[in-house]
Length: 202
Length: 143
View: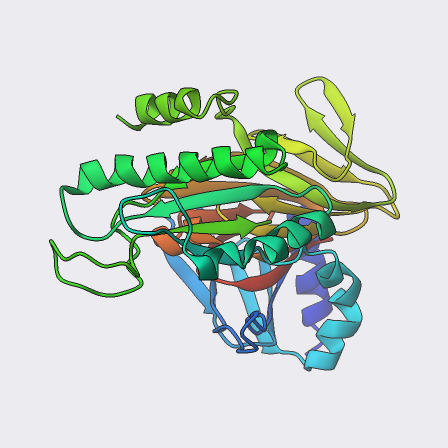
C-alpha cells in the first residue's frame, strides 16, 4: 500500500509532471429533445495505434500516463462542478433548415419559403455566424454527376441568400450528391424528399 | 477532381473563391485569448476564421468556443495551449482527418463528421496520451 505514492512520484518524474485526464460525458440533448448516444474515446498505444483502453461509459474518467491507464466512474454532479463553465463555452450546435424546390426549378416550395424568416432570425442571434449550404440529389443519374449537381444547387441557394441580404463571405456551398438520402430509395429513383438543400446555421 | 468543381461553382456564383485553408470559426471568447499563426499573434474575436496549424492560447481567465467545418465543436478553458496540427475535410464524402495537440489546459470536444467517417480519423494528442475519438462529448485535461 505505501508503495503507491512512491510509484506515483516516479511516474510524474518520468513524464515531466504532465498528466492527462479524459472524461466522457453523456451525448448532448438534441434540438429534438432526444439524448444523443454516448460515444467512446480510445486510449491508443502511441507506438502502433492499437487500443490500450476504451472509455465508453457516460460519466467515466480515465487518467493516462504513457502506458499506465486508470479508469473509474465519476458522479455526474462532480463532472458538472468541474467542467460546467467549460461546457457552457461550447458553441451551440448548428441549426438545420431543410429547403425543397418546385420540380425542375430553383424556386422554393411554399413550406420552405415560410422557413426563411426563421432562418434569417437565427443567423442574427449567432455571434461569429457562418452558414453551410449542403445540396442533395435523388438517386437518378451517375454518382459523380449528382455530386456536381448537388454543389450547383447549393451554389444557387447561396446566391439567393446573398441577394436576400446575407453576407456571402460567411456562406459555404457544398454538396453531398446522393450519399445522404432522407428517403432510402433504390438507385435510379426520383424522390422529391431527397432532392433538397440543407442549410446549417452555425 | 473536386477542386475545379468547387472553383467553377464559386465563379458561377459570382463570389470570392473560398479560401481552402479555412477550417473553422471562433464563436465565443472571454478573457484573453490569442491565436498564434506562425509568428503572428491574433487576438481572438467571434467570427475569426481558423486555419490548419493555428495554436489556441488562453490566459488565466480566457475561454474560447470554436465550430469547425465538419461541425466538431471545441471549448477551451483557462491556461490552455492547443494546436490544431492537422485538419483535412472533404465536404462531399465527409472523409478527413483531424489531429489536435493539447499541451496544457482543458478542452471540451463534441465531435463532428470527421470522427464519424473513419475509425480514429480524429485524434487528440497530449504530452502523455494519444486518444482516438469515436464520439461524441468529452473533456481532455492536461495538468
